[in-house]
Image (cartoon, rainbow, N blue to C red; front, side):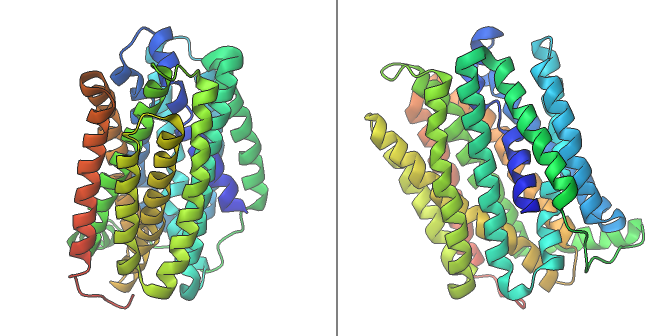
Length: 384
């Protein structure tokens, strides 16, 4: 319950501006690509901070860092709602991304410490399902409130939700029972980091993070502009309801975790990738119900991939001799790097080639993801 609540707050804050992109572009008189910076800077800040947060957790502990991360980000969420200018909002979003890094950097390592190995894929799938619910909740809340009172009310609502979650996390999160602190040693840190950068399987998993997340965020960044334009003409509230398909992502992640425990990760991940590609293709249709169905299929496929791969990274690093937190942080760095870079490029793709341009970008990235899943099948297993 504690990790679910923390994930809900983290991902509600991280993607709170995504349904607001058309309104932010209009209010601040910026381009679609520039408005997408409110998402890209937050994810980039988070990705960079992961590289520090994970090693720090090996020395100072998991739970303290997770509690402080959610609390500090909630305070910054309040400041975002009060931002006096476009540049101030961008700066605060980057800072908020840095503050948010404490949870995703070490959640998988925390589960690896505390959860029995036979249930780890299922547990990581459920955690990722919580991130899906958080992402959906943040988008629905901000989109709905934007219709009532504009972007400031939207971000204010997210700040209130995040503050409540931060209080719950402070009381609910169990202290680590199996964590063993690592003495602060730059040499040991470099050894562990070098180990998780040499394993070809881990490198392929990092590549999957970049390409799959890049495709996913690109599609959703451009979806707001598509639904606001003709022939749909939807406002932020109605357009935000589209993010209800994130429930399919939650189900996809949890289901894929169970299937991976039964049939193996190498069998499940390529199927999830193909499902995501099919979903992107479906969105080329014009009728709104079919577009929403395509988004749902893509979301289920993406979270099936991410839910399994996220836990796979920690398991592979553990089997290879340690460095689970470093491996998890590098995976998530790649994940949010893909979000920042390719999610930002979605605005340019939309401006130049409308929806077919976005579909071309996302499909190309997912095809690379699929090739990497096939490569993983040829890399020898360790003890996982």
